[in-house]
Length: 438
Picture (cartoon, rainbow, N blue to C red):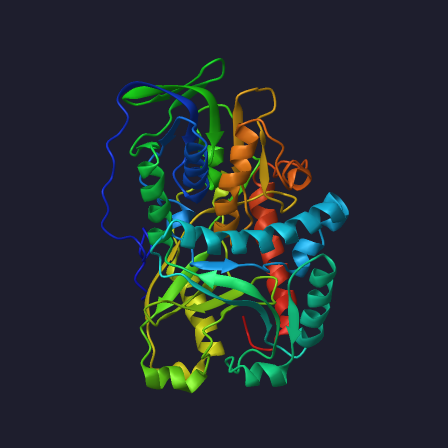
């Protein structure tokens, strides 16, 4: 049995701020203290804006503190490119440009603010595993490059020259990084508070009344703000006040596991001297990257959802065993390496698979940004600058993409059935591309 860590493996002892009590005023009130909320708070504070952040639990409680720690600058697959017919080529170009800019921005951001998060700037690759993947990945690389992506195709001979693990036979090679999620989000928190941001944890917003000012109520206090920014991502459908439509985003729960720390001898069996971060070319992707401590973090493969967007789901032993089985298939020479633990965290998807950043329809003072479609931390970091432009009345980049109209997700039971039916079809197609059982 694999040990399940409900709060993920990254969380360290941290001071949790006192909840809000009484009444405070702010230029901007931000709901949610993940990377999106805190990077926006930091950017606004540097522009002289009076900011209050309200967090229902603690900093990094959501996906910002529970993700795999992989910053991917070329996380584009065939499934994403298929939505071009619905959103247009300009939006897809914007998305590819956003990925490229976001990873470079995060790299600079960590250096600028001296955030200690075990960050390494490395290659991030989309790798083939089966024979059919060779042409699939070659074609994907050409498409992404034509859309402005900074990627190159690497064939099997060059994969061996670059000392990639033998399970992977080709790759779309791009830029990326790896980091420790809890250290990263709390590093942003530290700088934001130094800049004057007021952060109240254990302060769920239980009511919001639009107007001038907007009034946000918590169990013990209230904030009166000129503007409100919702950085609530997968938790948006369960906000206890009317904001975005409940079916605007779909909360999805990817699962990850972490191996034991490998010895030098065990590393020598697989190579991987560059310690690149790897995502496979499947529709239901597998992801692998070495951690700063010398373990291997892997995951995804079997994302789950809750009925009616419930957030009560926790990774089952069956799903965690699926992750371990993938590891055993790709690295049979590491049969003596165990799995330490597993965990998961909620991310958000829109129906058009585009992130969204906009003003709430019908309101002059409420804004939001969310739904990065996975591998979201670099995008959430850059969002601090983008959302700050929006909140201060400036035009902001990628606006055409961020404001694309997307349909709401279907009502239940259609949504639940559709998700798992599509997952089943995707797994079936993946098995045709990759002869190893999934």
